[in-house]
Length: 309
Image (cartoon, rainbow, N blue to C red; front, side, top):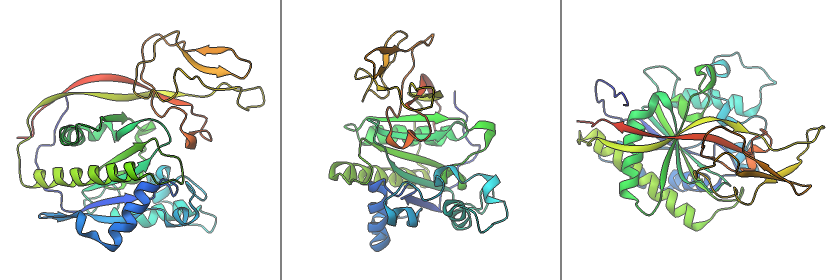
């Protein structure tokens, strides 16, 4: 059972951020469009502010220049004294904190929707911290109802030591929207259109929430991150194999013990040795090679979400 806040305060200060990673092109070009013509983001009770989160990386069409911006919004970075040697993204995180925060204060924006693309076959994936699940679960359910042709899943994670780090963590509540597969540095018309529709539906949900609409109780499957799995590697740390063809592109599908996960360059299969079925996510994500992540393991959980009366 998910807990709900004791009061329903309208969300007046909302931001839509894109280009947190400068080569994830749907968010980049949607935000650039909205900066010129922001009418799409206006609703009767609020107007969402478009923000190009990482303009330098966007100009270079790179994920980041010196540090992953979506890992830089920790209180450790935000509250530390600036130095000339700070990576650009740490400086930019402090700027976003001043614009949309300060993090952890009453002055922070009510909600941030952060737009991302992935090279993995995730489809529509909402990413939320566990502590912010109730409102976001209602949002996910609303998106499922409004866009039945777009399977929409919610991935929950609990940051280590409760040190939140994402761009949306600067606000009081927020969610990341991942859409894939799309290659880095490429803009695909179908995904651009899908993301535009999902943003509109998200803002419509916030408008209904602000108007006091009652949202009924429901049950939903969510996916909770359990950990990460690295590629097989040689003694010097280089790749010794790649994601197995039977696993590739099967994000959010069950992976059972004994099923293949990697194909070694020698031709042998590496089998999953876990004790229970898991659900891989972000399989073979291009940006995760540097993080030594071949995929994330998650568990699927059925939860009952109470009504928003």
